[in-house]
Amino acid sequence: MIMDNQAKQQWPGPAGLIPVTSGKAEDANIHNRNFLDHILVEMRVIDAIEPDLTTEIFGQKFSSPIMMPAFSHLNKIKNKDVKPMEEYAMAAKEENLLNWVGMENDDDFGNILAVNSKTVRIIKPFADHDIILHQIAFAEQHGAIAVGIDIDHIAGTNGKYDVVDGYPMGPITLKDLKTIVEKTHLPFVAKGVLSVSDALKACEAGCKAIVVSHHHGRIPFGIPPAYALPKIKDALAGSNIKIFADCGIESGYDAYKLLALGADAVSVGRAILSPLLKEGKDGVIKQIKKMHAELSELMMYTGIKDTRTFDANVLHY
Image 1 (cartoon, rainbow, N blue to C red):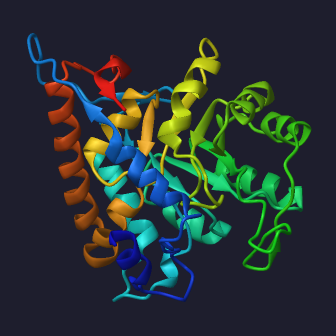
Image 2 (image 1 turned 45 degrees about the vertical axis):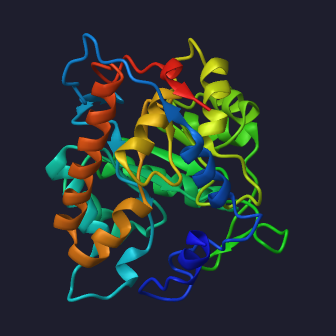
Protein backbone atom coordinates (compact mmCIF):
# COMPACT_ATOMS: atom_id res chain seq x y z
CA MET A 1 0.00 0.00 0.00
CA ILE A 2 2.87 2.36 0.76
CA MET A 3 4.29 1.76 -2.70
CA ASP A 4 0.89 2.36 -4.33
CA ASN A 5 0.65 5.72 -2.58
CA GLN A 6 4.19 6.60 -3.61
CA ALA A 7 3.38 5.76 -7.23
CA LYS A 8 0.58 8.36 -7.19
CA GLN A 9 2.74 11.07 -5.66
CA GLN A 10 3.22 14.01 -8.00
CA TRP A 11 6.65 15.61 -8.07
CA PRO A 12 7.02 19.16 -9.37
CA GLY A 13 8.46 19.90 -12.79
CA PRO A 14 7.84 18.41 -16.25
CA ALA A 15 6.12 15.02 -16.39
CA GLY A 16 8.61 12.18 -16.13
CA LEU A 17 11.45 14.39 -14.88
CA ILE A 18 11.42 12.52 -11.56
CA PRO A 19 10.47 8.84 -12.04
CA VAL A 20 8.04 7.37 -9.52
CA THR A 21 7.82 3.92 -8.03
CA SER A 22 5.13 2.04 -9.96
CA GLY A 23 4.10 -0.35 -7.19
CA LYS A 24 3.95 -3.23 -9.70
CA ALA A 25 5.61 -6.60 -9.17
CA GLU A 26 8.34 -5.91 -11.72
CA ASP A 27 9.37 -2.69 -9.93
CA ALA A 28 12.82 -3.38 -8.49
CA ASN A 29 12.30 -0.63 -5.91
CA ILE A 30 9.69 -2.76 -4.12
CA HIS A 31 12.06 -5.71 -3.79
CA ASN A 32 14.85 -3.36 -2.73
CA ARG A 33 12.77 -1.86 0.09
CA ASN A 34 11.56 -5.26 1.26
CA PHE A 35 15.08 -6.68 1.28
CA LEU A 36 16.54 -3.78 3.25
CA ASP A 37 13.73 -3.98 5.81
CA HIS A 38 14.31 -7.72 6.17
CA ILE A 39 17.91 -7.22 7.39
CA LEU A 40 18.12 -7.24 11.19
CA VAL A 41 21.05 -6.18 13.36
CA GLU A 42 22.54 -7.77 16.47
CA MET A 43 23.86 -5.67 19.35
CA ARG A 44 27.52 -5.49 20.46
CA VAL A 45 27.82 -2.75 23.06
CA ILE A 46 30.64 -3.81 25.38
CA ASP A 47 33.70 -1.73 24.41
CA ALA A 48 31.59 0.35 22.00
CA ILE A 49 32.62 3.98 21.54
CA GLU A 50 31.30 7.02 19.70
CA PRO A 51 32.28 6.33 16.07
CA ASP A 52 34.35 8.35 13.63
CA LEU A 53 32.44 8.83 10.35
CA THR A 54 35.29 10.34 8.33
CA THR A 55 35.92 8.54 5.05
CA GLU A 56 38.62 8.69 2.38
CA ILE A 57 37.49 8.60 -1.25
CA PHE A 58 39.82 9.11 -4.23
CA GLY A 59 42.56 10.26 -1.88
CA GLN A 60 40.45 12.97 -0.25
CA LYS A 61 38.90 13.03 3.21
CA PHE A 62 35.15 13.51 3.65
CA SER A 63 33.05 13.88 6.77
CA SER A 64 31.12 10.67 6.21
CA PRO A 65 30.50 7.77 3.79
CA ILE A 66 27.11 9.27 2.87
CA MET A 67 27.35 11.01 -0.51
CA MET A 68 25.10 13.20 -2.62
CA PRO A 69 23.26 11.51 -5.54
CA ALA A 70 23.85 11.89 -9.28
CA PHE A 71 20.68 13.90 -9.91
CA SER A 72 19.99 15.32 -13.36
CA HIS A 73 17.90 18.16 -14.81
CA LEU A 74 16.40 19.35 -11.51
CA ASN A 75 16.94 22.97 -12.54
CA LYS A 76 14.01 22.48 -14.91
CA ILE A 77 11.88 22.82 -11.79
CA LYS A 78 11.22 26.54 -11.46
CA ASN A 79 10.89 27.68 -7.83
CA LYS A 80 11.66 31.29 -6.89
CA ASP A 81 14.97 31.29 -8.76
CA VAL A 82 16.26 28.45 -6.58
CA LYS A 83 18.38 26.01 -8.60
CA PRO A 84 18.22 22.56 -6.97
CA MET A 85 21.35 21.25 -8.69
CA GLU A 86 23.45 24.03 -7.19
CA GLU A 87 21.62 23.85 -3.86
CA TYR A 88 22.55 20.26 -3.13
CA ALA A 89 26.09 20.94 -4.34
CA MET A 90 26.26 23.74 -1.76
CA ALA A 91 25.02 21.33 0.90
CA ALA A 92 27.75 18.87 -0.10
CA LYS A 93 30.38 21.59 0.19
CA GLU A 94 29.14 22.80 3.58
CA GLU A 95 28.95 19.29 5.02
CA ASN A 96 32.15 18.10 3.26
CA LEU A 97 30.45 15.28 1.36
CA LEU A 98 31.29 13.95 -2.07
CA ASN A 99 28.91 15.40 -4.65
CA TRP A 100 27.70 13.59 -7.78
CA VAL A 101 26.05 15.05 -10.89
CA GLY A 102 24.24 13.19 -13.64
CA MET A 103 23.21 14.28 -17.14
CA GLU A 104 23.77 18.03 -17.49
CA ASN A 105 25.04 20.11 -20.39
CA ASP A 106 28.46 21.71 -20.01
CA ASP A 107 27.15 25.15 -19.07
CA ASP A 108 24.95 23.81 -16.29
CA PHE A 109 27.64 21.42 -15.10
CA GLY A 110 30.09 24.32 -15.02
CA ASN A 111 27.69 26.31 -12.83
CA ILE A 112 27.48 23.38 -10.42
CA LEU A 113 31.27 23.05 -10.26
CA ALA A 114 31.49 26.78 -9.56
CA VAL A 115 29.99 26.03 -6.14
CA ASN A 116 33.37 24.37 -5.39
CA SER A 117 32.02 21.13 -4.00
CA LYS A 118 34.13 18.06 -4.74
CA THR A 119 32.17 16.54 -7.60
CA VAL A 120 31.97 13.40 -9.74
CA ARG A 121 30.47 13.75 -13.22
CA ILE A 122 28.43 10.76 -14.42
CA ILE A 123 27.93 10.66 -18.20
CA LYS A 124 25.31 8.78 -20.20
CA PRO A 125 26.38 5.97 -22.56
CA PHE A 126 25.91 8.12 -25.64
CA ALA A 127 25.98 6.22 -28.93
CA ASP A 128 28.32 8.97 -30.14
CA HIS A 129 31.40 8.35 -28.00
CA ASP A 130 32.81 11.73 -28.98
CA ILE A 131 30.18 13.25 -26.68
CA ILE A 132 31.42 11.07 -23.83
CA LEU A 133 35.02 12.08 -24.43
CA HIS A 134 34.10 15.76 -24.71
CA GLN A 135 32.21 15.69 -21.42
CA ILE A 136 35.13 13.92 -19.73
CA ALA A 137 37.53 16.59 -21.01
CA PHE A 138 35.23 19.37 -19.81
CA ALA A 139 35.02 17.76 -16.37
CA GLU A 140 38.82 17.51 -16.20
CA GLN A 141 39.30 21.11 -17.23
CA HIS A 142 36.78 22.46 -14.71
CA GLY A 143 37.82 20.63 -11.57
CA ALA A 144 35.79 17.42 -11.24
CA ILE A 145 37.58 14.88 -9.04
CA ALA A 146 36.29 11.82 -10.94
CA VAL A 147 34.16 10.88 -13.95
CA GLY A 148 32.11 7.88 -14.96
CA ILE A 149 29.39 6.37 -17.10
CA ASP A 150 25.86 5.16 -16.36
CA ILE A 151 26.57 1.76 -17.90
CA ASP A 152 23.00 0.66 -17.08
CA HIS A 153 21.26 3.38 -19.12
CA ILE A 154 21.30 1.51 -22.41
CA ALA A 155 17.92 -0.14 -22.90
CA GLY A 156 14.67 1.74 -23.25
CA THR A 157 11.28 0.37 -22.28
CA ASN A 158 10.61 -0.36 -25.98
CA GLY A 159 13.43 -2.90 -26.04
CA LYS A 160 15.60 -0.63 -28.19
CA TYR A 161 18.54 1.56 -27.26
CA ASP A 162 17.18 4.39 -25.15
CA VAL A 163 16.96 8.00 -26.30
CA VAL A 164 17.45 10.68 -23.63
CA ASP A 165 16.68 14.33 -24.39
CA GLY A 166 17.00 13.50 -28.08
CA TYR A 167 20.39 11.81 -27.69
CA PRO A 168 20.60 8.11 -28.69
CA MET A 169 22.22 5.83 -26.15
CA GLY A 170 24.36 2.91 -27.27
CA PRO A 171 26.24 -0.17 -26.10
CA ILE A 172 29.38 0.03 -24.00
CA THR A 173 31.59 -2.98 -24.71
CA LEU A 174 34.51 -3.98 -22.53
CA LYS A 175 36.81 -2.68 -25.27
CA ASP A 176 34.90 0.63 -25.34
CA LEU A 177 35.15 0.96 -21.58
CA LYS A 178 38.91 0.32 -21.60
CA THR A 179 39.39 2.94 -24.31
CA ILE A 180 37.31 5.56 -22.49
CA VAL A 181 39.01 4.91 -19.15
CA GLU A 182 42.41 5.36 -20.80
CA LYS A 183 41.39 8.80 -22.11
CA THR A 184 41.26 10.41 -18.67
CA HIS A 185 43.69 10.94 -15.82
CA LEU A 186 40.77 11.11 -13.36
CA PRO A 187 39.46 8.11 -11.43
CA PHE A 188 36.78 6.44 -13.54
CA VAL A 189 33.50 5.06 -12.17
CA ALA A 190 31.21 2.44 -13.69
CA LYS A 191 27.76 3.25 -12.33
CA GLY A 192 24.98 0.69 -12.58
CA VAL A 193 26.81 -2.53 -11.70
CA LEU A 194 24.51 -5.25 -10.41
CA SER A 195 26.49 -8.45 -10.98
CA VAL A 196 29.88 -10.00 -10.33
CA SER A 197 30.30 -10.28 -14.11
CA ASP A 198 30.06 -6.52 -14.70
CA ALA A 199 32.12 -5.77 -11.59
CA LEU A 200 34.99 -7.90 -12.90
CA LYS A 201 34.74 -6.32 -16.35
CA ALA A 202 34.84 -2.84 -14.81
CA CYS A 203 37.96 -3.91 -12.92
CA GLU A 204 39.55 -5.28 -16.09
CA ALA A 205 38.77 -2.01 -17.89
CA GLY A 206 40.71 -0.06 -15.28
CA CYS A 207 37.83 1.55 -13.38
CA LYS A 208 38.79 2.89 -9.96
CA ALA A 209 35.26 2.56 -8.58
CA ILE A 210 31.87 1.06 -9.27
CA VAL A 211 28.39 1.98 -8.08
CA VAL A 212 26.28 -1.07 -7.25
CA SER A 213 22.88 0.14 -8.39
CA HIS A 214 19.78 -0.55 -10.46
CA HIS A 215 19.27 3.19 -11.10
CA HIS A 216 15.89 3.49 -9.36
CA GLY A 217 14.59 0.28 -10.85
CA ARG A 218 15.63 0.58 -14.49
CA ILE A 219 15.77 -3.21 -14.78
CA PRO A 220 12.44 -5.00 -14.17
CA PHE A 221 12.63 -7.46 -11.26
CA GLY A 222 16.17 -6.23 -10.52
CA ILE A 223 17.93 -7.66 -7.50
CA PRO A 224 18.59 -5.22 -4.65
CA PRO A 225 22.08 -3.71 -4.54
CA ALA A 226 22.30 -4.91 -0.93
CA TYR A 227 21.78 -8.47 -2.17
CA ALA A 228 24.50 -8.14 -4.82
CA LEU A 229 27.07 -6.38 -2.63
CA PRO A 230 28.64 -9.29 -0.67
CA LYS A 231 29.42 -11.36 -3.79
CA ILE A 232 30.77 -8.32 -5.62
CA LYS A 233 32.95 -7.37 -2.64
CA ASP A 234 34.37 -10.90 -2.50
CA ALA A 235 35.00 -10.95 -6.25
CA LEU A 236 36.89 -7.64 -6.12
CA ALA A 237 38.94 -8.46 -3.03
CA GLY A 238 42.49 -7.19 -3.46
CA SER A 239 41.67 -4.98 -6.45
CA ASN A 240 41.59 -1.67 -4.52
CA ILE A 241 38.44 -0.66 -6.42
CA LYS A 242 36.10 1.51 -4.39
CA ILE A 243 32.63 0.01 -4.09
CA PHE A 244 29.77 2.49 -3.80
CA ALA A 245 26.07 1.71 -3.63
CA ASP A 246 22.73 3.47 -3.92
CA CYS A 247 18.98 2.84 -4.39
CA GLY A 248 16.33 3.30 -1.73
CA ILE A 249 18.60 4.53 1.08
CA GLU A 250 16.03 6.39 3.16
CA SER A 251 17.85 6.61 6.48
CA GLY A 252 21.19 6.29 8.19
CA TYR A 253 20.06 2.81 9.20
CA ASP A 254 19.75 1.82 5.53
CA ALA A 255 23.18 3.33 4.90
CA TYR A 256 24.62 1.26 7.76
CA LYS A 257 23.32 -1.99 6.24
CA LEU A 258 24.88 -1.31 2.83
CA LEU A 259 28.17 -0.25 4.41
CA ALA A 260 28.23 -3.41 6.52
CA LEU A 261 27.51 -5.51 3.43
CA GLY A 262 30.56 -4.16 1.64
CA ALA A 263 30.04 -0.63 0.33
CA ASP A 264 32.80 1.90 0.95
CA ALA A 265 30.27 4.75 0.66
CA VAL A 266 26.63 5.23 -0.33
CA SER A 267 24.64 7.81 -2.28
CA VAL A 268 21.27 9.02 -1.05
CA GLY A 269 18.74 10.32 -3.54
CA ARG A 270 15.06 10.16 -2.68
CA ALA A 271 15.84 10.78 0.99
CA ILE A 272 17.05 14.31 0.19
CA LEU A 273 14.83 15.04 -2.81
CA SER A 274 11.77 16.34 -1.00
CA PRO A 275 13.79 18.48 1.47
CA LEU A 276 15.85 19.77 -1.47
CA LEU A 277 12.81 20.87 -3.46
CA LYS A 278 11.07 22.38 -0.42
CA GLU A 279 13.93 24.03 1.47
CA GLY A 280 16.97 23.93 -0.83
CA LYS A 281 20.41 23.57 0.73
CA ASP A 282 19.13 23.93 4.30
CA GLY A 283 16.64 21.10 3.86
CA VAL A 284 19.34 18.80 2.50
CA ILE A 285 21.71 19.60 5.36
CA LYS A 286 18.98 18.96 7.92
CA GLN A 287 18.23 15.55 6.38
CA ILE A 288 21.90 14.59 6.10
CA LYS A 289 22.52 15.46 9.76
CA LYS A 290 19.60 13.21 10.72
CA MET A 291 21.04 10.37 8.63
CA HIS A 292 24.48 10.88 10.18
CA ALA A 293 22.95 10.60 13.65
CA GLU A 294 21.17 7.37 12.69
CA LEU A 295 24.31 5.90 11.15
CA SER A 296 26.39 6.82 14.20
CA GLU A 297 23.76 5.40 16.54
CA LEU A 298 23.71 2.01 14.84
CA MET A 299 27.51 1.92 14.60
CA MET A 300 27.73 2.52 18.35
CA TYR A 301 25.15 -0.19 19.09
CA THR A 302 27.19 -2.69 17.07
CA GLY A 303 30.68 -1.75 18.26
CA ILE A 304 31.83 -0.26 14.94
CA LYS A 305 34.36 2.45 15.77
CA ASP A 306 34.98 3.88 12.30
CA THR A 307 34.11 3.47 8.62
CA ARG A 308 36.96 1.02 8.03
CA THR A 309 35.74 -1.61 10.49
CA PHE A 310 32.19 -2.51 9.42
CA ASP A 311 31.38 -6.16 10.04
CA ALA A 312 28.74 -7.98 8.00
CA ASN A 313 28.46 -10.60 10.75
CA VAL A 314 26.24 -8.27 12.79
CA LEU A 315 23.56 -8.54 10.09
CA HIS A 316 20.93 -11.28 9.99
CA TYR A 317 18.70 -11.95 6.98
